[in-house]
Image 1: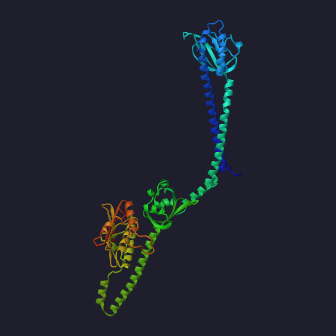
Image 2: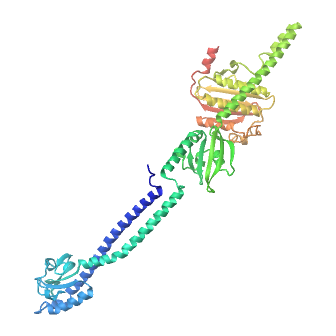
Image 3: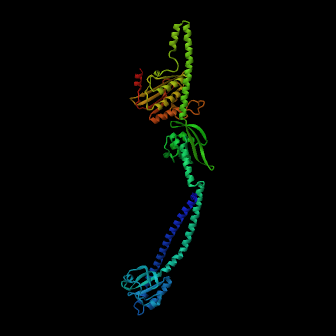
Length: 539
């Protein structure tokens, strides 16, 4: 099958067709208007000539002569030649001619109906007479009393002369139309070439294939893509980016980036220097690479590639907790071996009372305890998280205690969010303490008030009153960046955003222990198994 007509040729033919249709239509309308104006011009002239002849006193007085034509014929011929009309015919009330371009017709009856002018009215129209078809005007001639009709004046021009005048004026119109057609065709050819250059010489099939490939590629990749134009308006959001940013791709197109994305992310995308860094967007940690878009050396906008590091950060945190738990288990195993050696030695020496006192002094010991030590925290995953955090704190020489009044049932609807809040607050508190410090955790599901309270106290330096409002903002931290970490101050921001999403609050103040107290309240729904029931079943 041969290749279809090129886009340039299609555009040219379409535009030429439009130009020709426009020019022909305009020409026909102009010709009709010109013909109408020509007739109106002749009509005005003929009416003026006829009325002037009908009102001449010498013409009216001549009607009383024995031979009116002797007076009227010369006058009518002079007026006819001066007015450039075909004929000026004067006739009496019986239709007998007193003047005519052909003198032999004088004295004969007029060849057309004279009833209209003889009734005192003016007639305008086309009729066929002795000279042929003509455009004519007939006016009545009144006697000196002004009321009695004594005759008529007929002034006309042949239709053939009208057509000749009309066709003579068409040449100028035809020349103008031909010129307009040539300009339109040349302009159409230029526009077709310009459009082809703008689309890089691609044909419609090629453009469709490119668009289909582009859509499949953009919406099929796992990385998020966000593109902005030169005015920082969003022009592209693929499916992955819409999911990561929590927006509707169709609704954000055309809007300013600052009105749609978090301020930090929006500022990073339009930054002058290309870079790649973790950026907090909502509750997600995104690895963002942003750069300017350049086409033919011109900067036309920005593009950002988004990768989700939230799951990676969670896995690293869990791995770190598991590693800390394993290290602590090894340490406890070594400590337990030493304890057994001490007990064995005391027993071999016969120091039974000393061995008993040593056992009472050491007690359960260690950083790990059973779930019963966590009071009412029935949720196994939350309890395991607290155990891992306690192990890590113990390794750092910091005591982590769970308030005995804590209560959290299993199957809580917001359990994942609660664990995220607990983990971030405990990490923040442990980092704030020094060797020998203490952290206290309270997690309570208040079923009466329908709220989950998470409260963490530490005995660190605390948060100054003037910084409490800003402590939940990204990158706001009193601690230097940890090795291997590019940023600080993200954990508390995530805590606040979770609270805001759920309709709760996050605040900080002074702790009775001397450091900071972070309090988070999350709207709650009754868990599947409440803590009291769990405690009863365990007991």
